Structure formats: structure tokens, C-alpha cells
Length: 396
Length: 80
Image 1 (tube, rainbow over the protein chains, first blue to last red):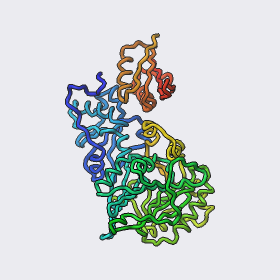
Image 2 (cartoon, one colour):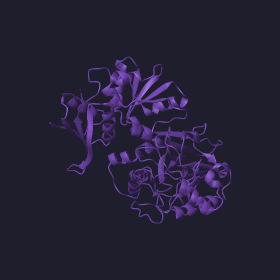
Image 3 (cartoon, rainbow over the protein chains, first blue to last red):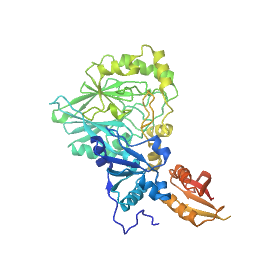
Image 4 (tube, chains in turn purple, yellow):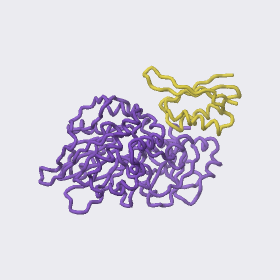
């Protein structure tokens, strides 16, 4: 067989990009996802959308071993898209299906492409505000980053490691990035913050906190400090830093225009950040309890919480944004109902699942160690597990 | 009882299994095939494949480093 499945002389297999596929799945179009990865990878992590995704699992090596029986397992009457880890095996299977008269397309780049795809969603404001707030949804990992744009300037918060994407996005909004912020040293994904700030020559901030030796150069910011944005054109908004330790000792939240609280992994819309990743669940858990009950207590209930992750697509609002009113979350997030620090620590200790696979390696990179693109890509596979609420694996 | 070696370093799925199957098809029962791959996904993929392919037995899987420190994934198969 040729190195290129399907062979050079045959007509090319139709491909679909992740960015074109996800809106179709979100709308509920009659698309069938044929996932051809091995059982282990399929059980650990699957493609998700705002509506249930019709998925059939038949590993690609079954198609190699018994093509007729495998092709017969694919339901007819839907648009079949074939998905694998990197796009090679799915291309082979899509070609086999095409030859058998089953119209199919290959998902270009497979789950690797799904894992890095970024979808910008504009956060609805009341109207007339001199700024734009964008929530950038890394759908495959359920990671959220933010771009605040005002008066031709932009601040990026918690960027994914694909730094050029944010530069291009800011340019499309006619803005230049003037500052890059991380809410904390992430354990589930490699931050794009240091690289983005270095490329642009702008200040970068993260507070690592006690017990971490940070090797990245940072421009320090104090608790309560304000950053002004868009000042030169006469339009400006404030981003205020609030120290919110607990998920990590250095965790920071950013209050945009007094109304939008970017909480990082401190408070999600359905849970709180897990405080166990440093091995000090009692100490960090107490700090998180204090943050949630005391440090955020002064903020009005109208404050909109915009976190760095979500657990399930049910947390995405009809507008496509993951957010919640602080007043609502104080009533609905289970961990926010706990009255004492001891009970809080017990609850989060009991709820957490095993730490994310390569969290120690990812933390090392986010503190300044180097690693190859290949290794980082391998470590980042799969959805985040940053919430204290234990959840079953996707689809389980 | 021949031992054959197959080098699929640098190849991504489905190539390692496509090539391994092609080799196995030419072998007689008892022959072994040692596949050297660089794709970490080849570990679960070979495990999954031998469950489907009744004529192949996975005797051993191990990792090694090449001269450059890159991970190699070695799969020892036996034709049954």
C-alpha cells in the first residue's frame, strides 16, 4: 500500500475543518461522527457540541482487518464525518467508505485539531460600552481565554499556547495587544502568555505564589492594582486585579469595568477550582474557602463571573457564553453552600478525581522550563479536569 | 521460526498497522515481527488490532530511547 492512504491517483477524499464541523454539530444537523480511534482514546475524550453528537465507534484497524463488516456498521442517511487522532487513519477510512458508495468526509487534523481549535464569542454587554469583551473557547479542552478590546488596545487573559492566533484576532479588531495576563500557573494546558508577551515586547503577569519558583520574567502587579486600557484615544476601561488564592497560592481574578470578573480556576459556573494539585489540599482548600466567602463577598450579585473552564457544554449559555451572575452562583454552586472551612476541605478532598495526566510536566513548562511541541501536544490531549466536582468521563 | 524487523519510525497511524498486517500476511505460524515505531498512539492501537486480528499475538510492548533521546515504541508480534 502507498504511504498515502487511498493512493495518489484516486480522487481526493473530501475534508471538513473542525471550525466548519462544530457549528453544524451545535445546530443539530444530521451529521454522524464515525470515530475510528482505539477504544482507550475514544473512552477518554470525544468530540462534544451544544447538542448531543451522534457518534459511532469503529476502530480503523477493524476497517483494515475486515472492511466489509466495518463498513456495514456505519448507519446510512447521515452526512458521515470520520474522525481519528491526527487525521491519517480517518482519511483512509473515509476513502474506503467513499469507494463503497457511502458519502463521507475526513475531519482534517483529527482530535489534535479539535484540541487546539479556538472559537471567539463576543460577550453581550448592555450596549454603548466603550469596549468589547471576547471569550475565546478552546472547545476541545473546555478552556476559556479572554480578549478585552478598547480604544485600539487589547489585553489578553489566559491565552492558549497558540500565540499568533491572538495577534491575528486583535489585528482583526483593529487593536494592538498591550498586556498579557494569566490568572494562575495552569496545570492542564501550556500557557501562551509568556510567548505572546515576548513576541510583542509587552508586559506579562502571572502570580505563581508561595512554593513555586517561576523562571518567566513578569511585570509584577499588586492586589487591587488597576490597569487602564485604551487611554490614548480618550476611551478607557479599568481592569482591577484581585488576589484570589486557593486553586493555586497565586491565583488572581481580574475585574473588567467593575462588572465582569474573570475568575480563572477560582470559581466556575457549576463548581469551584480544585485546590489539591499542589499536594496541600487542606491549606489551599482553606485559602479557597476564604477567597470565596470573604474576598469576593464585597462584589455585587450583578457581577458577571467569566471563568477559565467549563465542565460540560450545558454550562454554555444560549448566547454561546460560559458565564453566570455572582449572586446566582452564590446560591447554586454546591461548594458555595458549605458553611465552614473544615467541611469545605472535606468536600473538595472527597470530590476530586486523579490529577490531569501530565499536570506536573505542564506546570514545569508554565514556570519556564522548555519542552518540544510534540511533547506539549501529547500532554495537552484531553479535556480539562480543573473543577473540584467529580464528573464522569465525556459520554460515560 | 524467523524474526523479522519492521521500521516504521516517523510514520503515523494507520501506516504502522497497515505495514505490520502486510508483513504478517506473508509469515508462517510461529514467526515473529518486531515493529519499531515513534507514534505513542501505536501502543493502544497494536493492542486493539490484535484483538481483531485473530492470527496475530502481541508478545511484548516496550519503550526505548534512540540515540537522540527520542521515545521509540517496540511491538513484538507473533503469527499464530
